[in-house]
Image 1 (cartoon, helix red, strand yellow):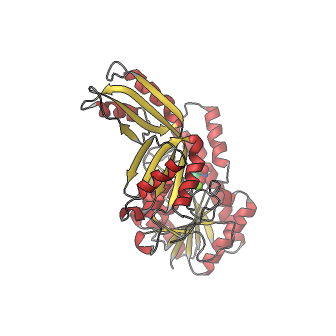
Image 2: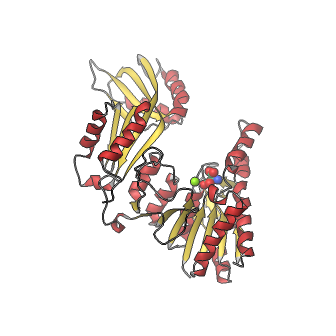
Image 3: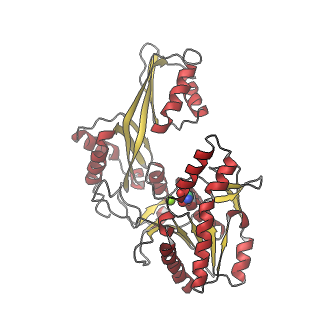
Length: 411
Ligand code: ASP
Ligand code: MG
């Protein structure tokens, strides 16, 4: 029988009533003839509560015990979902990660899936079980301890199962009805996309669109898993939601598919560093050792052998970056001053159409200039252009770009 993976996020299993609604959807697919693997998140808010309890108990916690605690939310929903299905006379049972097994690396709280054993679940399917309910977000490390995959990790569990079991599709049920051209809370003209290419979704996810964990999109792209993002609160039909798929499956698309933003950015500038080989390596090596995720980088034209180096980073890593760069000042690195700007935001336009069409960057800059918005840093890739601007203009920039590229209209 063909296999389908259905993943239900926290809001879709927030209480017993919603678990029943989700189970009904599973029942519909079983009736169509699918063997279904259901991946569940913890009830919404549960993981936050568990993380809070760990922090309160032990500020410098043992990561293995952190995982033992925070993985438990998913165990509850997996068992409840299996019970609900059984009440509906659908043969189902629950599986915790280690029982499958979902083998992961030993990076507790940020583990990566290495292998999923398909034998145990397939044996049960062969015996007549129709639904395997698997606790998302968790696995077992090489030392036999429970691991978790990082926040939002059940998306990754779902895609990994779809790849391992050769599922026809991986449906991600969430509280939004698909992927939008931008955040509808910022631009009311935002339009739901029928399809989006893996590459675009990957950019959007890593640029701040929160629908899918970035890692899950990477996996889907690598294993060509067709992903559908849809709402568990709306009526289901075959075209519901947004399909994340290979470029070849998309006949028509706009040059720009979406506008993404990230509010919590900061910009730091090292004034007057020597312009010589090895300087960038010292600065960014030191930041990387300190666990700082640098994003955009600009180096100014140098004057008399000195230059300024500017980079962006998440606001919550500024303290760490400041400490690291202050520690090496006067030792490995000389500079006049370190200037931090906490009030910036990143706005990006994304689209595979940019590969073949020129002028997108010019148009973007013109739109921002017409709105009187100053661009502080620019970065580009083949399919995206990002700018760092003052945070107070973020909404305006998103709306203006959405309008200018006419994203409210389908191609
Ligand atoms: N429950 C976990 C979290 O809240 C994993 C997930 O829902 O994807 O991050
Ligand atoms: Mg999620």
